[in-house]
Amino acid sequence: MTGLRRYPSDPSDARWKLLEPTLTAWRAERRGNGPDFGRPPEHELRRIMEAILHVDRTGIPWRYLPHDFPPWETTYGYFARWQKDGVFERLNGVLRRLVRKREGRDAEPSACVLDAQSVKTSANVPTAGQGIDAGKKIDGSATSARVDTVGLLLAVWVTAASVSDNVGGIHPLAAIATAHPRVTKARVDNGYRTKAIEHGATLDIDVHVVQRDPTVKGFKILPKRWIVERTFGWFMHHRRLARDYETHPHRSEAMIHLAMIDLMSRRLTRESTLNWRDIQPQDRNQTPFQA
Image 1 (cartoon, rainbow, N blue to C red):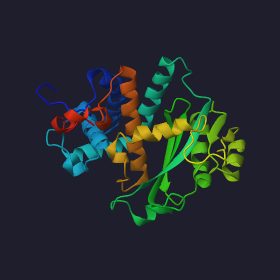
Image 2 (cartoon, rainbow, N blue to C red):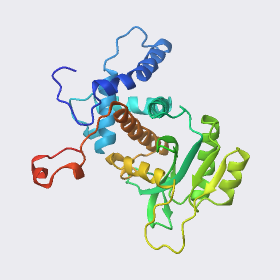
Image 3 (spheres, rainbow, N blue to C red):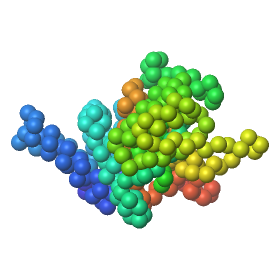
């Protein structure tokens, strides 16, 4: 690592200590069961993770990775394998429990908030994976996120934007019931109707619809519901999520897990990276890259 110029997306030593045990355990398991046992690895896990976070944070294509990172083919290969082996979900769970404990909460939540966000897709996404969100007039994909009452990710499901909140809520509710059995309450907006509510009841989850006051015009913050909206705002600090660039929906989900891993590791080490809005106007011309 000595002599390398650091990127703003690179995890600090303190953040790497949070990520390393899970990745090292994965490599040890893979090498113990694979044909490469005994041969030293060619690339450091830290540098691989830095390259993946660089793509997630900056939004660049894999082929545009700077040359001081490992080859893009190698980096993408690790990303795909870590997604398939559930490494990102595992890291997300480890960091979420650490954040909750630090804030004086139980490691596992008892309530969650559900919502979906539609985003436009790029030319990489097959037509079969796209759809039109009739309400928001967006042709693309939908991210159904389930977060705890702190706003930390519990489950995510990426579908075509044409899938309704009501239908899209059933799958993540089942995932939450399996992975987080302590959850007994879920707050949703009025897009989640009878099917989601009834399915929640079969899982012993009380799906509570937070109603919007019909007499109020314009934007209105809804109690408890704003938490998941804030999480979607956090995602937008990662330019790879501003549009869906992934060919496969499970890779889109992995990018979302990565964004939350980045956020929670910074939260645990009390670090932050400047965004464009944090820079003083007179400094913008002198600071080409701070996001």
